[in-house]
Image (tube, rainbow, N blue to C red; front, side):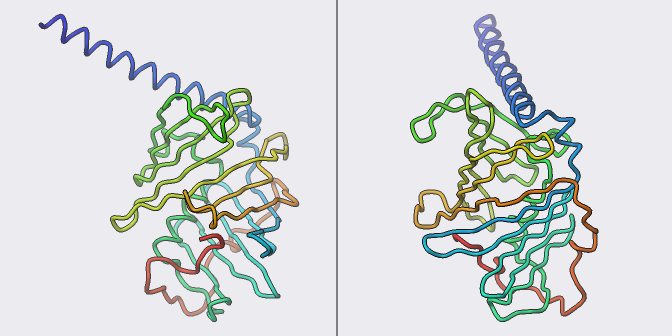
Amino acid sequence: MRKTLALALGIVCGSALLSAQTADELVSKNLQARGGLEKIKAIKSLRTIGRFQQGSFTAQVAQDAKAPDDIRESFTIQGMTQVQAFDGTTGWQISPFQGRRDPEMLGEDDLRDISEDADFYGHLVDYKEKGSTVEYLGHDTVDGDDVYRLKVTLKNGDIIYYYLDPDTYIEIRTERQQFIRGAVRETVSNLGSYKQVDGVYFPFSIESGQKNRPDSMSTITVEKMEANVNIPDSEFKMPSGPASTPKTGGGAAKPGE
């Protein structure tokens, strides 16, 4: 009985170790395929300009991001611009579409979104140091094609699934599960049209929306991306003005939601 139990435990522990090794191997291959860790970390800032489209609706979008966790996003239509930003600690917004032109603190939902998006190098880079875990879940399919599936559990408990192309090891889809106020919110992003910027591959087409809600899907097409742009820290700081806080968990509605 003891030998049987010891053998069973050995198999379980061995499988867990193999899974962990496989997960780390896939993470390493993914980072290498994107350009290698040295080139990835050589980029300290990114400026992105693109076009948002959902059905016949279009708008201009822009994003400034800076390592390690600063981000500012804008959405412009008919001469009005919505801004959301995070400086590593504080998330804020300006929402003229809702009649609010003064800066205000982000609600819980939007703050959760933007703080996770602000991880400049992505959730696979230095994931252990960030308090995250990565598991290899085996093979899966995306639109009928074989993929590797990784499960990344963030420090805050949220989960991001990465679907890696088996030939290139680049992610072609991510799915995010967020746990907010006892509810689960699931979103999906399809990534494509990868291009190199300063030796690192980035997706220039991002289709995203709520999982299992095809009508919510929208596409951002990147028109220009520049690396190591001089972006002052002040751009991410909340401007002076009434620092009101939205009453509900979510602030300004995001396109596609």
